[in-house]
Image (tube, rainbow, N blue to C red):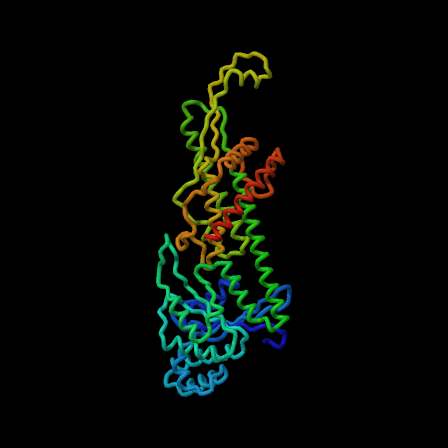
Length: 444
């Protein structure tokens, strides 16, 4: 325990290249913390990050170099403790014949010194790798001897696609080895490639269980978890509001041109349709950006520039003024007026509401389940599909749009409906529907 401020010290440990730095980046939402490369030994010294809540230090989090010499340490150390192991690493470093060996033993020493100072150890384990029985067992043995609170974190979990597991998964074998050393009880899943907020909360709750004997630290940590849950709930509520207003604005948006001559009709239709789709596509990206910013995501442009194969679709209608129309326009007086033009109007097709809703719901899910860039190219969550919007809700959207036509796409708070009661009824039913969709994504 950090005696200066009574805050717990949490060390992220594990073999080299198991995703320790990625785990910290994901938990802290700090994409530039540490250095990440494909080769082992990238982290060379222990690096500290402090987490505060309302100006009060909640915990110190340490990233550490990976274990590389567990078997050698177990063979040469008599009285197992993190301090004695660190001293053995120092001895091996001084006796090393090459500069490479010196650096490797220096990394090992830094890791064990961090273990010695810490209250809780997050042991990151890549479940894609078949564990070496000797090396893994020796690491587990040494950590068990440390008498620290140890939480094994299974990283890089295989994907499930259509009921099949994609990729290697040695979770069962690793769990069996952990059981041999009484380290099974607090196993957590946290894939740093597919961040999941619920898994993140489970991991933090496991840490809090390890702090129960420290009343002040435990209370602060539970408050920290509660604040994270409240913030996530607020983000989801705001994102649902953004989608709701995007759908309502799309329903109201119309491109229209009056008095189009018959010979120009087809070209005007194409022109208005292209303008409509271009404006709606830009609007969709604006809404993407707005939702992403709720999560303070850094790589916004990569998502906004995401290309989809299914374009947003429109409905084009024409109307020719009849004799009664002309009579009405002229105040009811009878005039012999020949009217030879047409009105061309472009509005969103029902499919556009379904496509737009699907993409934005998928975006929310993608943000909440990834720690890397939320791009279509490396994220199967963002896909082309159409959510089924209930017919009565779709009809209500189109009716609302018919009563509130506007030549611009408006953002949240800008939609001045002529019938506020109608707008509020539609907004309420839409938000309930969207929240249910978000919850379904979380379950799936």
